[in-house]
Image 1: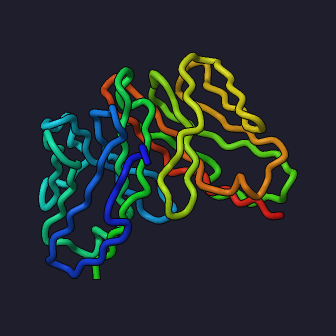
Image 2: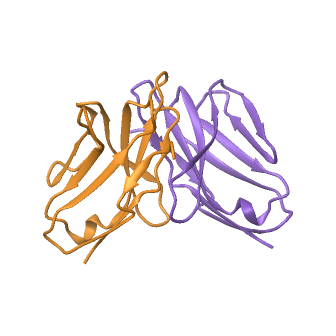
Amino acid sequence: NAGVMQNPRHLVRRRGQEARLRCSPMKGHSHVYWYRQLPEEGLKFMVYLQKENIIDESGMPKERFSAEFPKEGPSILRIQQVVRGDSAAYFCASSPPGRVGEKLFFGSGTQLSVL
Amino acid sequence: TQLLEQSPQFLSIQEGENLTVYCNSSSVFSSLQWYRQEPGEGPVLLVTVVTGGEVKKLKRLTFQFGDARKDSSLHITAAQPGDTGLYLCAGHTNAGKSTFGDGTTLTVKP
């Protein structure tokens, strides 16, 4: 499967715990985007990364949220001390070289539920 | 902040009917994309429009980019139940990221 891989598909956490969401981009793609989606709403941009660099994190809350895309391994979106309002679907997308960010290839998402 | 407004928010029609959904903004985009999303899955890219006034056809789907590159429409002819889904437009700028509208949820009843 050469598509964008996200895991886990479903993640249940209790308030105060940490959530780690993983994303492996498509082969040959070096740009990764994280979006958040609430039911029956569109996708809200969170962060855009290239290998080892955060390019734009303007959509990410300043506290409790962090993202990384190391030289080796998947991109990680980390949410510390989760609260019920963090419950949402989190989608990762990767973009081919060229007009970066124009054509996005999405994973199947991680549904985070905070109890 | 660049905002994209999609209308209608919800649309329920019978199989065989035609429909148009809209995506409007006050901002100019270098290109605009349409995606379709099914429940429990990520969005899938349908088309990219780049030139003002451009029209692209994908089987029964016709996409148009406004002359000023601020708005777009998606027209579906003879809708089928398999067209059911959330249709999202996204505007891209040279800053490297895409801004999404809130989508139109389409239900096509057999």
